[in-house]
Image 1: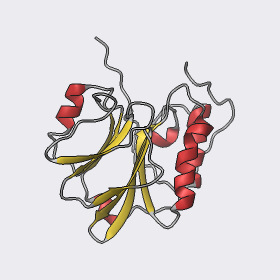
Image 2 (image 1 turned 180 degrees about the horizontal axis):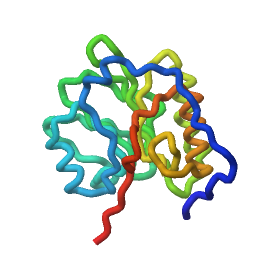
Image 3 (image 1 turned 90 degrees about the horizontal axis):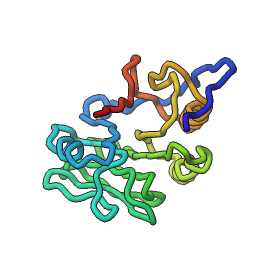
Image 4 (image 1 turned 60 degrees about the horizontal axis):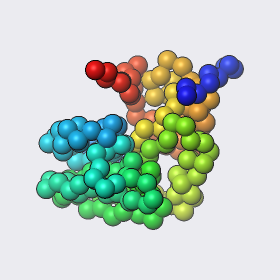
Length: 196
């Protein structure tokens, strides 16, 4: 079911967070792989250091391993829907608060420590309930820099949508309140469905 449109003027929240300089030179991507085996395999052949992934290909609910990358994931009751692939030479650790839909990893990039988060929000789930793990993580780790990416299943002009729905507005306001910087630029869609 498509979220309802917001029928009032919407102003994009401003974030005062500055991106750490190391994030400008570290090759990374955020992608929804649509549970595709080949999409996951192709991604792992790339020259990336960090891949923030939603809906990876899983076997028995978990993402398989790869020789060049370490996969950070946390399976709870559901299959893994969010994970982070890091090149093996990057020092990192999975942090408390991670679950099947929210993964938090502290990553050392040069002289910086950054928390990289992969988030997957169910399209039909209550957005306030889905934001709770992120709020809790943020409240417990306010001293850490956070780079969050994922498939949040909401539309907002902040990340290039032509319109902002109520769900997108809620996500946008939550991210701005947490000081999260939106990296999307331009009008390039962040999701495209390929039909056969």
